[in-house]
Length: 285
Image (cartoon, rainbow, N blue to C red; front, side):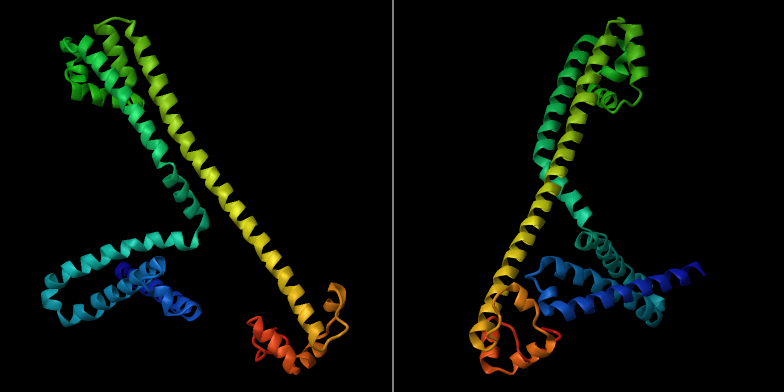
């Protein structure tokens, strides 16, 4: 029963994705799935591979029921390709795309913060191994450079650091408690929060940049619309509609008047020069 329900849901989602792809092809043409549009090509590849995988698993499995092991490897490869469908969320989710863009833009700063954290780990490791490496009771923590690095990494993640510090203070000296507190303040609370702050700052700056781009695009659209309106009004005035003088009179053109204007060859020529087809109905224009 569970397998039947799973196959039915898989078929349903594959059909939805195929319908979506067909609608995109109808709207954008074949250039949507061409190599010139990497996102569309990847989307098409994922959808087609999912459909092929289901057809092969449903139809060919019955024809070759005795040799399913031969088909197992190709089916697994196709299923692995279908995992890329998760990345399709970037095509439709603007917030997710902004989040990933902000994280990618912060890679440089985060890398340098990780280098600084690595230096802090190495310095703390060498300091502890030199002074505590000879103690047999805590050799599991500071018996070598590798063990010391792993111990300091656990301290950075705040995983079991009280047990480590208590054992060190009991074996060596209580003043080592100051060392562990200082190391945690520098590494975990300062450097790790610095990484978080850098990522958050880059994310906010990328969102602000996206808002500015949208506002600029809106301003450009409004300016182009204003120029288009002026050009159309001047063209109509120069052709046959002599009463068009300003925006107010232009707004008073009724659909019947506009239909009569479209019968004027000079008006149609002017609209053609503006890449506007006169074959459309007055309501569509």
